[in-house]
Image (tube, rainbow, N blue to C red; front, side, top):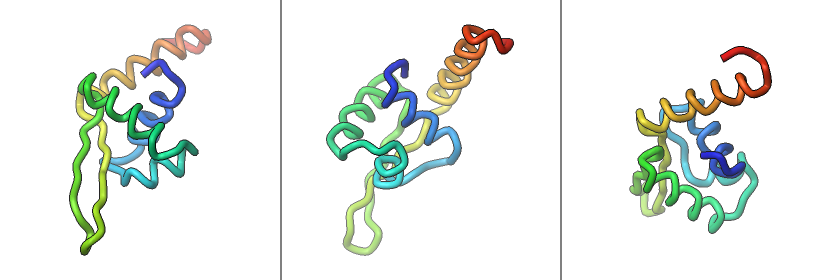
Length: 88
């Protein structure tokens, strides 16, 4: 989660129950391949859940923070605030 792209992914997902892959890609302004690699890393760490399905005949991928991912993100943000001297 320390890498900027992974932090951006988790921050985007923290604001919702789940988000479509394309929405996250466009929000954090990375390519499909970059997002895919970083999501795989977060999924392996247990921070992000990936769900695949269809809307009509079009394949879709949804991303969501796991409970462990939400906890890790909150702890990471708290640590950043402490480093910045804003409490923690």
